[in-house]
Length: 275
Ligand SMILES: C[S@@+](CC[C@H](N)C(=O)[O-])C[C@H]1O[C@@H](n2cnc3c(N)ncnc32)[C@H](O)[C@@H]1O
Image (cartoon, rainbow, N blue to C red; front, side):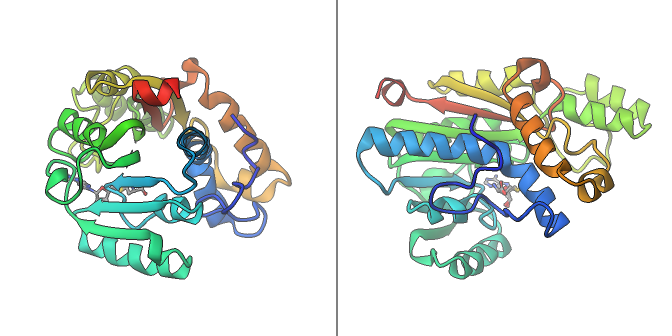
């Protein structure tokens, strides 16, 4: 894993900011730093392997472009599929503000009916971030994401982790809800839980392998960030930088996957692995 404070080569990482300059933007960067570093490394490897500086990237459930816009900032062409017209409108505005409107295309659609709106087998990389929690059929969602890849391609899958939610409920004193999430087939802590479904690392890697990819890497995301009182991070000099480095170090360790708020799985086609 690269230095978590290192800016990407050609574009600032999503929502990045000087950690001391704007606490809310810094916390946003904290939420995306691990995923961004893994994703950027994967895209860089695809660029080298294909010899094409501009890749075709699909962001299924890409929303308002948290990742799509910075990926376009790296020079890639990004298609965002999302069912929400509001999200697509925000995406358009954000892409224009970032000066990448010519490389970002928003399409209304959903992960289940992906090939009604995009080409099968047409993408070097597919992002599926924060979407599997909401789709009707996660196996179909992953299967479609994989079917959108070229023979040599990479899947970036991010989803809510079960253990992180259990830990967060317990540390907030909601012990019954924590136990409920632990035993619930969808990992929900109750009827008021806004997240319809959570996953273990084994469930996510199982979905990716069942869709025919090999697992390139698994990372735990937001292992500590959501548990640490914001005031500690915002007021202590150097705390944000230190926390980013801690998150990056813990992300790679399987021991922390079971308590991460989110899990990131990189899936690779055989061809992409051998390239
Ligand atoms: C938590 S947001 C994540 C947005 C973006 N991927 C990100 O990482 O910032 C979930 C997104 O999934 C979209 N979504 C919900 N159901 C979907 C479905 N069935 N197929 C595709 N996207 C869906 C929502 O509209 C929303 O934009």
